[in-house]
Image 1 (cartoon, rainbow, N blue to C red):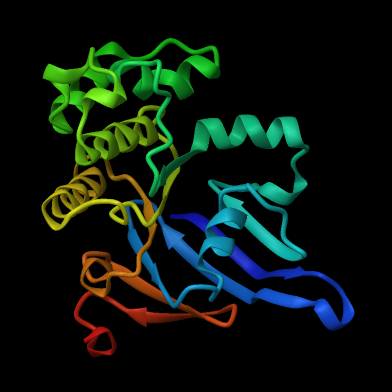
Image 2 (spheres, rainbow, N blue to C red; image 1 turned 90 degrees about the vertical axis):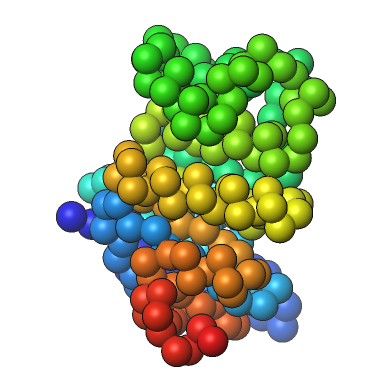
Length: 231
């Protein structure tokens, strides 16, 4: 079952002499429970791809379909609700609310959707993330690695169709980076979560089931974790 598909996805900025093609006819399909990594140099179009899939930007042409819903057909209010319920975001900069504690940050997307959190699931999630003893702590009382765990918990809290992770280890040391990667992999294995991750780290890219490379707006699938192209 495809949870995500794009067809001839294009994004351009500017016009005439200033026109820049950020993405050029990208077509891909991702199944539920897959862990996908996306690599490529800075300015290649990786973040643009993630923003279009996440409904944060509109494509110039082409389609993005998540869990059977075409994003470009939605009005802004409808798209905002869909994002909140179906797409979990993990950013390099954590983006936690400093006035809220760990548990409050994790359940925030659910509360914003006027829903009641599943207490048992949230408690299990915090235990999985090693945050049970820190659920009343504020972000300022946490290490960088712990803050990123909270961000992962927030992304998983609503059981989204897909998680989009933009350089989730970019601000972390090697030990915390390994822990974050283990948690992303665990979310795939334990919750059958679908994850698409942008990374500059080719070693972490190979943790995924499939690897895509973006160069000058063109997306190419390199293959699975053992593909020699990644060495």
